[in-house]
Length: 168
Image 1 (spheres, one colour):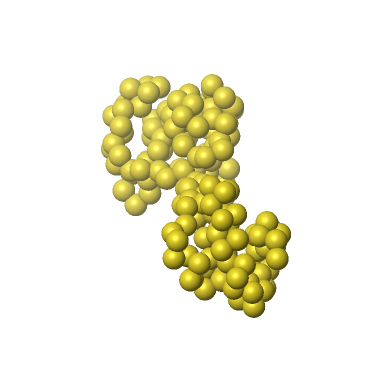
Image 2 (cartoon, rainbow, N blue to C red; image 1 turned 60 degrees about the vertical axis):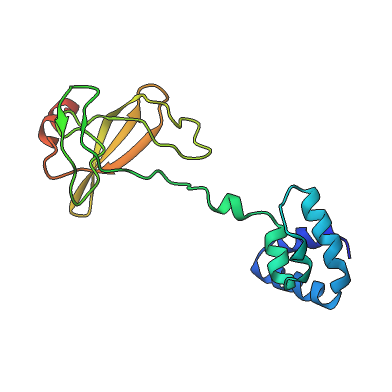
């Protein structure tokens, strides 16, 4: 039983992981080879992992645990701030996170998303369009520095009338 083939098979999905674990349970002498191969791939496993159930060993040997802990969406934090564009002091958003200025509707591009080419860009997000989504309005943005598109719901105190006039 080839450890690489077993790991490749187990990585295809939950059903294949279970089948690979069943095959490994039928041949427990191959657990040590699988453990050596996983360590060679950079996965840290304790020596007692040879005694683990095959399914647990295979899951850990795949080495996907660290990748699953990486956040893949930006987390908006509700903080008061001073608008970088117009200088307006912006209070907390309350029920919804306030991530843009209610006066000029601009924001700073600060999302930190793994794989996002524009992460930590720091440019100004300019509003480019208003869209109606159900009962609320959605503001579509484009970053001045990198062109990254962004969308967020408008707050009740946003000056959408002034923005609509500038679009017209």
